Amino acid sequence: MKASLLLIAGIFVSIVLSAENELKNDAVVENEETSDQKNANEDRLAEVVESAFEEWEFRESVDDFTDETISIASVMTKEGSNVFSLFVNCRNNKSLNVGITGNYINPTEYQFRMRFDSYKPENLRFSEQNDVLFLDARQRGKQIFVKKLASASRLLIRFPQFRRPVDLDFPLSGAKESLISLANKCKTKIAAGSAKFRDNDGKKYGSFVDMLEDVTWVDRYSAWNKNTEED
Picture (cartoon, rainbow, N blue to C red):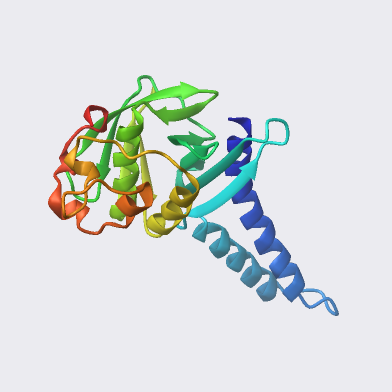
């Protein structure tokens, strides 16, 4: 758990440091920067940092003490001055998890409202572990949720807090590629018995990657309008 949280935090830090180093390398050291040059560089850094909140990242990490391998796909968003991350990780290449972390998460209850694109909103339950919110569902429910992440363009999440609800808007552009990279590392088994885990010919998907790559899934199944907890 600690390794995955450090990895999420490291994604944002590495982007900012990379941008800062790039600006330093481009700077003219012979003369002091003019006011216009300084402002231009500050604007450029802001643009690079802002773009980090629109791009999915795929990373891998190994815990130095347990040798546990953690693969993670994630994206960040902002709500006011607070930063939140939506992530999907795979521990020891077999256990799929979906979670939300941020610098200000204090829900008054754990039943959240979520909406993919313009589809019907869903009620999903989360649980809290070490200040991280995890989707409270079986593996098959998590697989359905991740398939939706790979198929939609936007995810809205609303969770209740003491003073007012918090609305998070996560972009899903590029999510499919990052999630497929994760699925290639994660040997999570495809659930049996449900049509949601079968291809257009009615055959069970050979792997989670096959499920993520199937573009006919959304048109064939009405899974969007069902609560993930029930899948």
